[in-house]
Length: 243
Image (cartoon, rainbow, N blue to C red):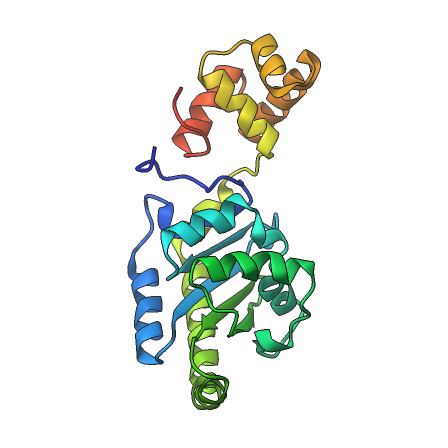
């Protein structure tokens, strides 16, 4: 299962590096940025202007990426949401320490991720939004000094990365990928495993009629005439796994 390219556990968060046609140059570039400026980690996150899905590349360890995704933290991460509303760099030290901040960064600390960082927002001409986030474990004094030295260069880097991703085939393919709900994916996944509609209803504790509603919606989104076609297309797109 680890070798199958796919969206992560939540289908509105995409690790672009996991897509089969992606160029590894993006992630390698982030590693170069990290090393050049003496940072702990660098991450790029963008938002699909059509359906609001989050996508990106990061230098974080896979364990943190998977945990972040499984928890759905992209939906509450203040470093992402604050940057979307700002045109100036967002210093994480100025973020409100509310329940969302604590939920994300208390867990991040367990994975060795620093709560000291900054997000540089980027806006494109088509309503596209992105942000370059950096983290550092330096002392507050050294961190403030580093920020002053690198902020101008990192703003240029942020624009460069965003433009590269927006122009990439990976994002173009993602924009064409239908956005199925988590329940629709579950129903298709169980169908792929050979379960009947009644079986699926029992497994998911929903009615048989609700299962049919989800299947109908999935067929519509996948431009499939039959459920079998929908399952086949979902598998080929990496949205579900073969049963």
